[in-house]
Amino acid sequence: MTRLKQSMPQYAVGHLKWLQTINEEMSRQYPNVYPAGISYDGVGLPDCIRQGKSAAEKLIAGLFLQEPVK
Image (cartoon, rainbow, N blue to C red; front, side, top):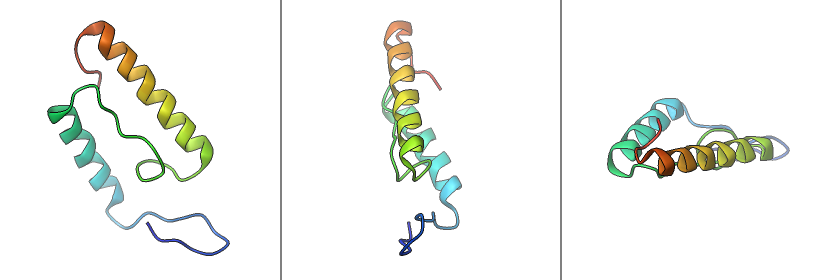
């Protein structure tokens, strides 16, 4: 991430590919663990809230289904 004064942070080129790789590896190695936060998919507060809510929903669904949700 690059910090710019008076601006929103920008992800580096290749961030989406990195994110896809992280999600695939986490799914394989750590089922029901879902990364969330500014480093992953959106830098604003609403983005972080959305990611946290999505991670919680996947976790709850995975616990009741006894299998990871993708």
